[in-house]
Amino acid sequence: MNKIFEKGGKLHWLHSTVDAFETFLRVPGTVTRSGSHVRDAIDLKRILIIVLIAAAPAALFGMWNVGYQHSLAIGDTGLNILGNFWYGFLKVLPLYIVSYVVGLGIEFAACQIRGEEVSEGFLVSGFFIPLIVPVDIPLWMLAIAVAFAVIFGKEVFGGTGMNIWNPALLTRAFLFFSYPSYMSGSECWISLRKTDTVIDGFTGATPLALDGAPAQYGTGFWDLFIGTVPGSVGETSVIAILLGAIILIWTGVASWKIMAGTVIGALAVGLIGDLAGISKVPCYMQLIYGGFAFGAVFMATDPVTSAQTECGKWIYGILIGALCLMVRLFNPGYVEGMMLAILLANTFAPLIDHLVINAHLSRKAKKLKAA
Amino acid sequence: MSKLKETIINPIFRDNPIAVLILGICSSLAVTVQLNGACVMALSVTIVTGLSSFVCSIIRNTIPNRVRIIVQLVVVALMVILVDQVLKAYMYPVEKQLSVYIGLIITNCIVMGRIEAFALGNKPIPSLLDGLANGVGYGLILVIVAFFRELLGSGTLFGMQVLPAGYEPNGLVILPPFALILLGCVIWVHRAIYKDLQEK
Figure: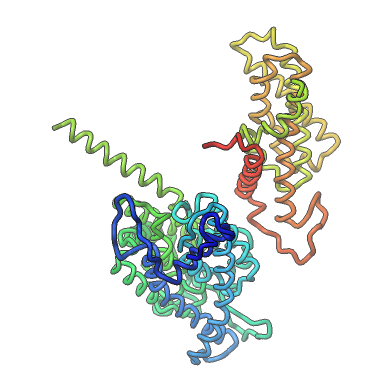
């Protein structure tokens, strides 16, 4: 690296920023010199890039779906695949720019102040944020929400790896509670230009907003499974998300125990709801509604905010699934429970780990005493 | 600095009851949605803390140690009821808006805390000043938090539109959790000024 950015150099205050770009663009030639360390091909950067690859199908499908829903809304056939994709791409691109510029800007500034290396943590959060918000959200709102999530959800706790809550979900939670009229209801999930006129009799409610009743439009099992329904950009297609799940599990980047636990927890509470006659749809349908699949695969498995112990991962996953279904079934105020469920489980993850480790220790102590 | 001056200045800034002792958090979450209510609350708490410290200090040598808490409670309750009656008589709409929180001043830790920590061991006049200063310190934070919450949450100050009409009110700021975040920011700034208070 250039001498003037080294300690004592003129531009030393820019050290973190220059270092970040240097290591991002080129492979650094230096290695750790002292102490024990593991040499492995996998590092933080590779893990994060695998997550990005896994989420790419959902993102690409989401962009197409934004255009498709728009075509349907203005009375088009929706068969122009490239046109749909292009419309969605132009709609989602500004969200990405805002998400990355604001988030990385704050991250760089915080690292610069603390004099630390900039880590790649926000690359993934910034990639997920546009996928879990309504596509027509005003950009300034997104900017405020991202700033809030990065400062109060991440930097005050000490930056990458130290945060308690998932920054992407915190962004969404901020928007959800700050500007509810932009984040819920039946209009916000379909992208429209100011000049568009919506055709008569068209309803744009998401399946969950319609209270789970199979309505006139696009809420059949296969529509939900393929993802041709209105919703947040990346959450609609269960197939694309499953593809991502396979990549994540195959490479060992995300824990299959958390995903499985989430599904089990949701099915268990959903079954109780079915038996009690509260739920309007069979419990397996809940798995493909709304943001459940996206949350279970990409949000719940965030290695920083989830439980770390193997047994704890099961508990953590089941807790998310059960909480999500409880919110959906028993709380008419919030039709979608996944975001709140994951944030709540994030809060309890350290406690779960603590209890699991303590239980393990006391079991060992008992064995020692007996021996 | 003279001792008396310290008694007045310290509780407002350096030893602020909310920022340093973390007392009186509940009410600062509840009454800071609007600046109006926060100011009245701040005034009420200041009067209650000051007068109860004063009264308790006068009778400090006659209270048997074992029943002192109950005696203090009686004094504080008396002051709270007096304040409540005055508010009801002259500021009925604000009293209505603050509802139970005026009555709950009696449970505000700052009041009992100052009596226990200061009034029982000092003469009446310093106790009065100490109580008043702590009330002002509490009120200062309340007003700061309420300022931001009303400005960002409703776009108004004291009920008057300040921000342009196109401003989109932020719903999260109205909710109590955001007051906690703002309090955190206040404490952040406070610790940045008084560096010796930073925990290691």
